[in-house]
Length: 120
Image (cartoon, rainbow, N blue to C red; front, top):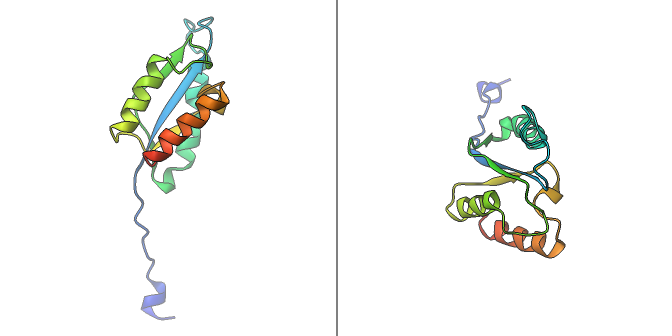
C-alpha cells in the first residue's frame, strides 16, 4: 500500500443553516412548561443533529406560531421566516410535519416555490 492510498481525503463540509418552524392552531396548553411547539422543536433539533456530519446546524431564532391556523399564510413567525429566507439567512427549513407549514395545498405549493427560488 502506498502512502497515497493511506492518506485520507478530507471532504469539506459546508454549513447548512436550518430554521425550525413550529405551529399549533390553538393556544391551548401553550402556557405549560413543555408544550406542542417545544415537542415539535425538539424533534426537529434531533433530526438536524443527526445530519451534523453533513454540516447541518439549527439556527437559534425561534419561528413559533402558537394559536395560528395553518389555513392562512398570515402568521407572524411564518412571515419572519420567509423574510429571513429572502434575506439569505436560511438554507433549510425543518418542520415536524408538512402540515405545520400549511393546511392548504395551494399555499404549500406557493411556499415550496418561494423556498426553492431561494435555494432552500
